[in-house]
Image (cartoon, rainbow, N blue to C red; front, side, top):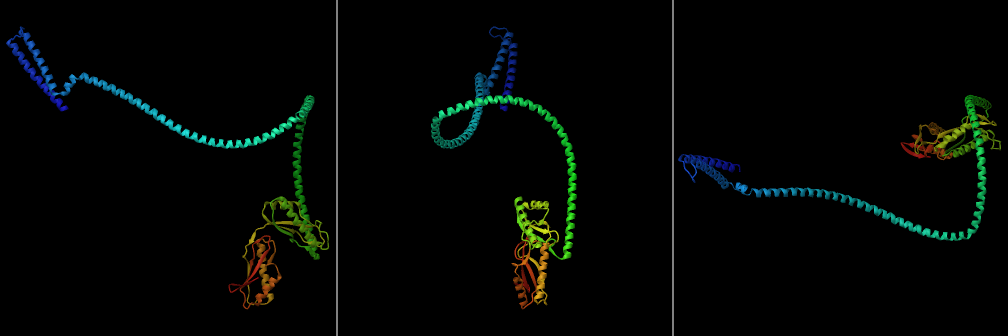
Length: 473
């Protein structure tokens, strides 16, 4: 496009230049020749020739331009039509743009309506589910109402029967109402009288309250002074009780020491110091059960003490064993926690025959497992020269003493026995050891069952020969 435009411009300039030169020469020649056209003067003829030459130049230029450029021809001759089409196109474009804006607005509105419709659909679904739930609840309520309706119908029939009975009693009730109304009138009159008396009494009470308040303040001051004096008295009393308890303990110990000395000197001790008067293992969960258990042990200890110190006495109801009440209460409180305990009533001194009272103490220990079943309690080697029954008996006594020492050190309070405690069992064991053709390596005492603090500790004796069990009790 740029090349053709340049060629066109160059051609127009060149043609315009050539025609100008030709027109100038033509005008010069006409002027020099003094030609006249149409009866005009030479000067006027030269002017006309110049005008014609310029017209030819312009015509030729336009002709060349129109001949060489189709777009120029269309632009000159169809410019108004093109402008009209352009305005129409611009008007259509503007209308299209406005339509586009309207369409976009409509699209936005449709989108919003779609969103609202979707939200409405979700809400409708939620509402539908809630309505279904409500409908289910209403169905259940309707069933309940039907049941209640049936009950109400039944009650209605009963009420109708009662109504008939009440209608029959209406005259009687009316007479009762009249009597009650007359009584109510009398009571109202009495109430008014009582209210007047109450007001008078209230005035007297107010006067008395003022006097009482004055007296209360005075009494409060006296109470404060009395409290200070009471505290001082309680402190002195507590100190006095403590000194009296110490004195009683010392006096009791002195008396017991004197009794022990007298009994040892005369050789008639019936109950030795630390002797167990009664013994039990139990588990209680409240204070009442604990008190009953302690009282049972005290009764058993009392019977044992009477039997030891008064063998000829026929009465067992006398209270011989004495234990401080504070110790009894402490013992009851201690064993009321639901744990297993072993409780013993011990003599705290030596007592001779016929002596009373017998002073005792309560010993409490947890009833816990000491030995497991099958656990070895003591082991004793058998020397080769031990062949006689006396020697075997000595070795067994030493073994049992070792078992007793270990059991007491472990906390056992009950008895120690071999198997079921029969003498025949020990005798049979010794006979089998003596009659055996070969000597034994060692004898061992093992726990026959799980043993607790309360005991008893049941032992099984085992004879070992060359690392193997030869026989047992």
